[in-house]
Length: 499
Image (spheres, rainbow, N blue to C red):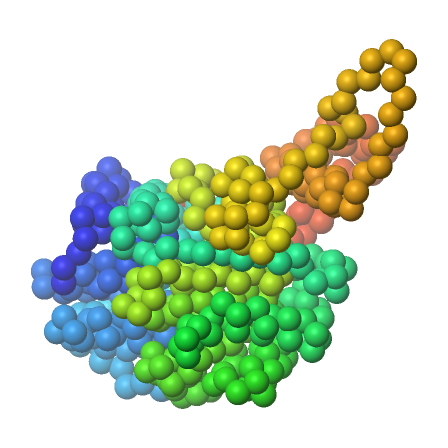
């Protein structure tokens, strides 16, 4: 199996980390880097050298994609997933984590290497139980975003090294990924009242609000203007917040005469497989998914990503956009149509921004907040260089703010702020509020004991810092007791000390 130089280097860095004493390094690579292909190459090497290897994943689409790559390379492999007939004699096994967690007594011989796809999920208890049952073998983690929405660091799952690869923008410039063109509209007013839940916006409430026919009609109009050109249609992946919104969106596209299908986690596996086959063969124009295919969707000829899901999760944002960045034989670039203003949200920003240096095993969230993307106020394109839009040529007029004006003695000036200036001031105020919010969250993340919380309350000038600290500390302890993953000391085996 041929690999690019950057993929070869990733495996070499992984081997160097193992020689240095690490047991569970994570290879962090952007969506479209070819993590599955790289992993399949290592699996073939392990099998050819007489070893045993597992590929562990949570979606059957990921397992089937890996199976196709192994079959093409002539690597015999077995399955531990659902009702598929197992083949315990095969040195290579494709394993569903849900199935393995239910069948801990049927896992067979201990593997020499376990490759975990989407490894940012692996601090969950189901993954930890499977690894404990296998007596903590050597692990290779694969992910594009080593973060979790609950803020738990990756080291809590027993991972002890990070292997960094080129950033997304480097892969684009090298010609390995498609160019990205983005448009972003202000989020619909109905989304402004959506509250946070579980580290992200309440997706059920957001999905219900986005089912409004006027909102869907606006998204359809903009999609047609950009993706239906000269009789050809860009195959599009649409991401929604809820199952209800997914079906409503697909029905809206079908009523307009387009071929659209909605899939979700509860969609039967045969229907999900059929949707992917139809999408790859060109028999579908739009594939709408609700909390599905954000990871594991491999459609090289995808020409557009339509984002109808409001999110505050950098993981979800990068994974959604990354679905369309794979190199296509039909389209020279990928369109990103952001109808919920994710591009404008501090903390998300440009999906091609350099983030590889920010990842950490000990930080559950990024320390630096990315600025929002600059969007043309006339055509809503994100192709802004300075004050000029590269798409429509519009030049943003900069206006002097009151604080920038110097009044000389005797001058009398009347200032009337226009609508654009008031909007800009509101954006500045919201950006400052977001920055204060993230700064407070980082301060609270450093609090480990009740004394730390009391000191923080006193530093902030709260009238009752002790009472506030007791409430926050108690909440933190209850959450940890419910969700904490056991930390395994490397080299201690499956019955190692836990914290």
